[in-house]
Image (cartoon, helix red, strand yellow):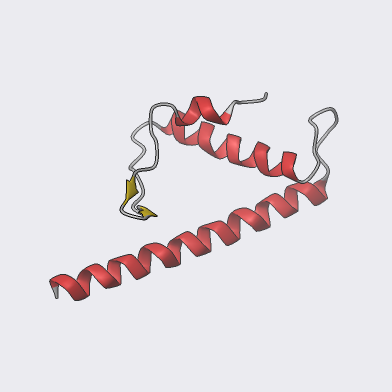
Length: 92
């Protein structure tokens, strides 16, 4: 099933703060919306790697999408930690 990623983000957009995008995550109160976001990210990652959806997704593509998702999670986690550390220094 293909999901248009723009449909997912119509209701909830990332807020720009100054010259950067706020790294603070929005709390997803709706698990269905969170699931749709995850599915859209997975499908778009596979599409970028050449998967067209016409056959079963090769294991290699699944592994590459998984690796990319892990790297994104690690990077975002570090970004959030750095922001929390900076906020603690200011309020200190």
